[in-house]
Image 1 (cartoon, rainbow, N blue to C red):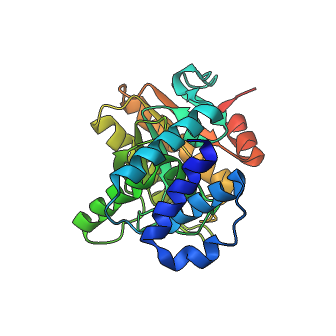
Image 2: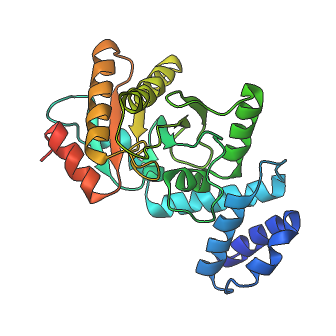
Amino acid sequence: MTRTEQIKALNAMLLEEMPEFRKQAEAFAPDQAAQRRLLRSLMNVRPPTPLNPEFLALQDALLRAEAEEKGVVDALSLPVTACHPRLAVWQGDITRLNTDAIVNAANCALLGCFAPCHGCIDNAIHSAAGLQLRDECARIMAAQGHPEPNGQAKLTAGYNLPARFVLHTVGPVISGAVTGRDRAELASCYRACLELAAAHHLESVAFCCISTGEFHFPNQPAAEIAVETVTAFLRQNRSIQRVIFNVFKDRDAAIYRTLLGVV
């Protein structure tokens, strides 16, 4: 089966489950790139319902091949910063990192982003991990029985990601001036993730820039809170060997490199 045939087979199985999207699917060209975008779109909108083993086998093969093609980055091989021997800064796609856990900036439903091909990190992580991630999150939320509060953390498997686990945390949404509560909740996101990682004996964690994207926390103070909270935690904890501040935008890269003395 070619890659295009593989993608079209996955699309056909999802459209069988969700026939209400057949009309929209017809607008996608038959080439591989368009069909792959359709697949991501359908995966994004699919609710957490029982998973077809045939679909999962084909999905997993595709996602793992794509991960290899993107290139897996060994988190422990990244150079540490001058100011701290267990901190690193890396600019790139967090779904490429081979680490014990990556951190997902989630929303309070904790089910991933349902907007087709949206550019948020929640969408990127769920799309690369596969539908099993939404399914596990749904089980967690059903057991919890209420939306996820800001500043806490949940742990799931990483599925088709190079990372073994995903730490999900909900940061504050900023609609005006940043308040003391906003700052405390953001700090709690970093602390809760590290505490949960340590409790599960994880040794390496990669953080995204929590709350700075769709949630509009200003980049500079968010980075200052992240660095201060993580370094304070590492002073008290020796089990976590490496924390990576993963940045995607040049602006965040410059801020973190300045804060951590990276040339």
